[in-house]
Each structure stands twice: as structure tokens, then as C-alpha cells.
Length: 346
Ligand SMILES: *Cc1c(COP(=O)(O)O)cnc(C)c1O
Image (cartoon, protein in one colour):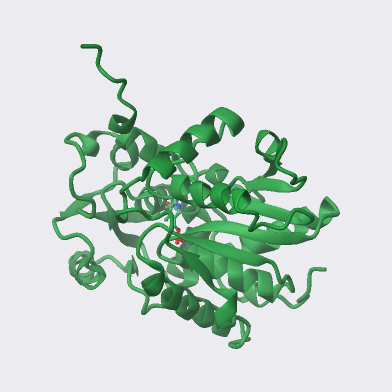
């Protein structure tokens, strides 16, 4: 059922970085007694690049472009505990390029010491220069400051490639999730079960837009549930739709994704980015105890909360494959260790 023999995706330069295809694993204990026989987790937490995650697939196309332009230094910006930044630093190391990272103070009220652990520990270990940026939640300002760092690289005779945060640049990273959609179709086809639903975290929207567009591109009509982890659905829906249309245009079929294809829910977002809810914490606990999945409080824990809730509400088809994409975030667990501090004996 895989359409499109002449695949438009292969026209884009790609640097092979991710360990893929990632496994599609049955959620055996979650299925027991649920009335579902085809619940799966797509293990995109196992993509490699210094502990895995969804950014490995996205970086394949950014680094493909950077290499094709002859860049020697890649610049990226993100939250202090950004998985994207950490995987970017690792990708640069693998490919022998220089990398400079900018870390934004996006989450208020984090305990002291988060710069010593989690993703930032790995950034240090990877040995890339770190620029701290005190502003949070201002994409334009973060991108603008990154351009200034790019100017510095140029003035030293380097050739920078900037991975922008804002949604006004082509969604190259989303191509990685077109690849993921193809893998999911191939893997469920091989098991002889039709794909009914995919559940994925929706943040920058690269993964969400990539999966929706990829499924339609390869002829699947499966429902994609985007679980908001960054902003409310009224803001996220137009963003995902725009990114999907941009991406579909890059693939040569601008009308591929309709408004109704984009489903976003912010019922599991809580107070916002980086702020786990009791539901997030319960989902992380269930993932660990029932399926030994290590989910994080910022992204995949919220998405898994959404998945379990949709399952509970009967919103997922029981006769088709339903796939939760584990987008990674494992290092974030350690930066948020305070959430699991044992209650002190008094
Ligand atoms: C970035 C990230 C997401 C969100 O993915 P987008 O493509 O930005 O929407 C989800 N999970 C993890 C672990 C991430 O690092």
C-alpha cells in the first residue's frame, strides 16, 4: 500500500545520522484487558546521537543541507535542557563539523543545578561552545541573536549554517518524519495490520507536520493526534497546518494536507512548556512500570498521557494499529530528578 515510487523526499540532501528504522514494539502490558490487539510504540528514543530522540531524523536533513552548502560550523538555539541542541552537537561531532549552541532560559522556576546534568551535561561532554541567552519564549530574538553568532563565525573566516527556531524557514527537519511515517506504514504492513492512528508530541511541529504529511504522501489515511507540549491548540493548529502545507509544497503536492488532517489537543499541556501535570507524572510512572519506557516530563510523558487518555476514552480504533511515537527526551529525566525526590521522613 506504499504509493509514490518516485519519491520526492530523496531529492533533498540527507546526512545519515539516525539509527533507523527504529523498532515498532507491541505495548503488551498496556494491551492486556484493553480490548486492543494492535497497540505499538515506535521507538524513536533509540535513534542514537548521544541518547536518542526525534531530532536525529530532523538533523539528517539540516546537516544534509549544511554539507551541500559547504558549511563548516552549525549553529542552533534551544532551551537549556534542549534535546535538539544536544543531538545537534552530537551530529556535528559525528560529521566532523564545528558547532556552537545557544541555550535560552525558557522554563522559569527550575531548581538550581540543571546546568550540571541532563542534556547540558551531555553538551559539555560533547565539548561545543555554549552561549547563554537570558530571554525565554521569544523565537525572533533567539534567532536574531543566533545570526549575530553566525556573523562572528564569518568574521573568523568560517562558513556557518544556522538551524532556525522560527516557523518562517522551510521545514527541512519535518522531512525526517516523512521518513518515519514511511517506516510505520512498512512495519504495520509487514505485520498485516492496517494503520489506524498515530499519536505524537506536537512542539515545534516538525514531527507532527512530518508524520501527517508523510502518511498522506504514502497513501495512508490514518488519524494523527498531535499532543500539544509547547503552546495551546488555538496557536498550535495553524502552526502545524502551515508547516504541513510548506512541507507538502516541498514534496510537490501543496494540497496534500487538509485542515481536517491536523488534530491538536492541549488537554495534557497543563500550565505550559516544561511544566508537567499530575497526568504527566502518572503516565511516566505507567510507562516505566508497565512497558519499561523512559518518558520525560517535558515532551514524551505528556504525549503518553494523551495516548493513554485517548485509549481510555475509546477514541482509538481497536481493529487497526495505533502507534505511539516515543520521541525521546530521556536525558531530561535527570534534569527533573527533583520531581521524584522521596518524601523526607520527619
Ligand atoms: C523536540 C521534542 C519534541 C517535539 O517535537 P517537534 O518536532 O519539535 O514538535 C518531542 N519530544 C522530544 C523528546 C523532543 O525533544
